[in-house]
Image (cartoon, rainbow, N blue to C red):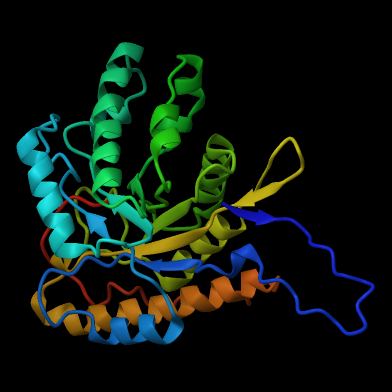
Length: 321
């Protein structure tokens, strides 16, 4: 959790002491692009290396529940460990994300849910966290999208529903700020981030996932949002604050940009790569200004949507983290 706590400078030294490195020096922008073939993302990877943007490792399709049937079997555990051994260094550190939506996502986002049923669902999620943490204990494991807006809603609180056990067991929280409606929606994501920070209470890092494409378009994942809308959402997320009773101010530890190549046709991959690289550069510049206490310059209205014919357009469909 990124803390905003002033520090005191020594006053008796004969020469100015070096300033301590603030905790916020850790990366604020993270890479979560999902590649599907060799050779994708060459420009993006160069941009990430140049700017020092780290990549969050991701276990898709259920995480430990390898076949996403709602039960973690010994076969699932072996498959997950096999993936971890092939993908992750034994002493890897930092945040790591599992995408576990099916078969639980509808129930976890329902307006009403029996408390006993929620306990059953959370037990499987916690089992997955325990297994992942045992496989790579140096990584800070968490689930994409949790807590959701529904999980922190007034309606859930009135029913006494909470995913606090999952929050407590997670190493990092990865809520999402995916924009489903064109237009200015950044305040919605600012409020959600504040609620997440309040639920976490400074115990865990919080990295908020962003997507460049509109969700909620009747399954059409080809519509890109203008870059100024993406930056406005990122600004709201990074600027959101929650103040603890002791006066400590908490903010999100960072943002992660996610986008899959499978939502674009192969002939659009090169332009998609350039779009990703440009977005990371602008997100990094935004985060750097906010870290320095500077207000970013206002964005010029977008001249065209990234979904224009000259940029990635049509493509396949798949579920999103």
